[in-house]
Amino acid sequence: MRLFALAVAVLGATPAFAQVELPQRRAGQWEITMTTGEGSAATEFKTTACTDAGAERAMMAMGTGMMGQMCQRNDIRRDGQGYLMESDCQMGPMRVVSTTRITGDFQSAYQMRIEGQVTGTPGAAQQKTVTIQSARFVSATCTGGLVPGDMLLPGGQKMNVLNMPGLGGAGAPAGGANRRQP
Image (cartoon, rainbow, N blue to C red; front, side, top):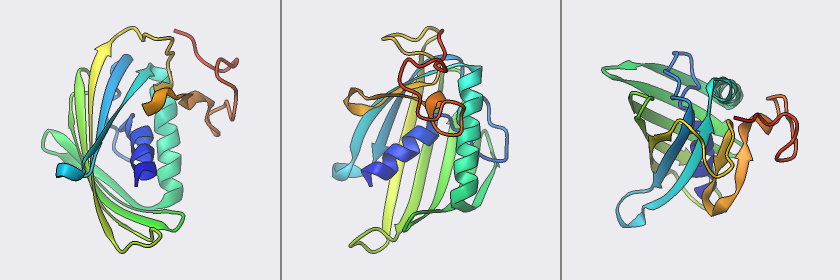
C-alpha cells in the first residue's frame, strides 16, 4: 500500500491529470503532506516539489498518459468550489476504484482526499484506502538545489519528472542536459 500511496503522491503532486482543465499550481516550491490510512493506522510523509509552467504541463501529460493506459474510467467534474474525480484503474494485478475530492486555489494551497477500494493485492481481500494530500505554497524560489520538475521524496531521494520516460529525458541522469535550471 505504501507503493500505491507514493504513486498517488507522484501523480497527485500535480492534480491536473484528467479531462477537465484544473488550475495549474503557482510556480515555485510546494510542500506536500501525504497521510495514508486513518486513526492510529495513519502514516504521514512529506514531499517537496519545485514547479514551473513547463513542469506542470509535463506532469499533466504524464498523468494523463498513465491514467489513459491504466484506467477504464476516469471522470472529473466541477463540484461546488472544487472538483470530483471518479476512477477505475488496473495497476498490474491490483484494481483501484477511487473517488477524489480536490479543493483549494492552487496558488497558496490545495487538498486532495482520495478514497478507494483496492482488490487483487497478494494475500488480501478488498481493502479500503484513504489518502489525504495537503499541499501548501512555500516560495516562488526553489531551495535546496531543487529545479523545476524536481520532487524530494521521503528519505531524501530526489527525482525529476522531466527525466521520466515519455517526457523527453527517459532515464537521463540527475543533472543531465534535459534538467531545467531556474
